[in-house]
Amino acid sequence: MKIHYLPLEGYRERYTEQLQRWTISGLSRSPRAVVRVIQGTTLTDEVNTGSVLDAYGRCYFGATQIAALVKALQEQHLAQNDVIYLDDMFTPGFSAIPYILEQLPRQFRPRIYVRNHAQSVDPDDFTFNMRRWMRHYEQMVHHAESVTVLCSSTAHKEMMRAACLEGDIRVVGHVYDSQDVLSTVEGAPVPWRSRGRKVIYSSRLDAEKQPHFFMDVVERTRALGRDIEFVVCTGSSEVKSTDATALARLRGLEEQGAVLIKRKCTKPEYYGHLASSRVQLNTAKQDFVSYTALEASTFSTHTLAPAFRSFPEALRNDRDHLFVPWSVEDAVDKLVALVDGDATPDVGWLARTHSGTADRILDLMYGREIKNWWELP
Image (tube, rainbow, N blue to C red):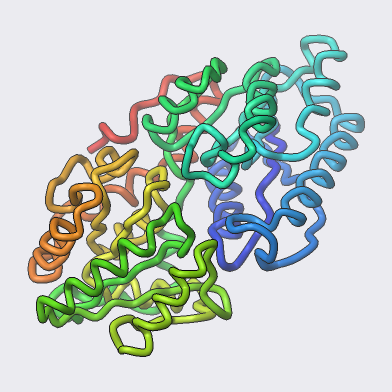
């Protein structure tokens, strides 16, 4: 089986660089699969316009990727059992693929797999405001011949169905590699009892991540006299947000010594902070499983998140790790309990389970049945 893989462009401040490496490594585990990576041309290595991916960069990279794929399809015919795998549903120029394939004999039409990370079905995603036209794009992808849409959680699949997206949707989880993440940090993770009373916040500061709620938790924890250190990590030279009031408030907390901001964090530096923290606090409205939770699981660090959207599924409905949305009091109570408690035996379950996502995708590509990741031991 030949797999033409179109990755997202790599950004140090996002997971896209690692995602590409994890996906290639995972898909290459099959001795019968030949993985060809179709790259595009980058305009920037930082997100300058937009909040998730650079708006100009995403369009230019995706369009040049599709141009390279078209050339590859012309030069080497693919068969029905071959695959085109796109790491992002919004890949400008996508329509060229079904346009070409439907003009070829059926035996030369490969199957298409497309990853949906959020899109306009999610009211907290930046594309939601584009839904008047984006939904038509998503319908086009879902209705193209031989397309399977991959997502990470049942909540996301349900949102697509509610938006009348009727294509083949499979819940597979996040592509992840816990061993690769562990290898970036020297030595073993700090033993639980040797860790300081440290809580790390890893999310973006954009509105859908609810940074003000995070800061409410910080202020209430301090008001209660709890000796807990809060650390915010960012890969950028300065913290960014679509909410200017959140930035001003965070800087004020930094000046007060309530929050420590680690800027220009490399992945190894961030993982070092995560591996020495007791809790990773996630206050997002929009997170389907969450890479930050996978990383925390890798380093035996608790995740505390709202009982909202995909978090109950990802955290196995564990009340100790889920707070009432959006109760500051409950979040603080749960946070203090986790900081004062101990590591649980199965804290690594989430990372372990999603480290098998590439294998589940391969199983789909080979026509095998897959197990629900949230039901795995």
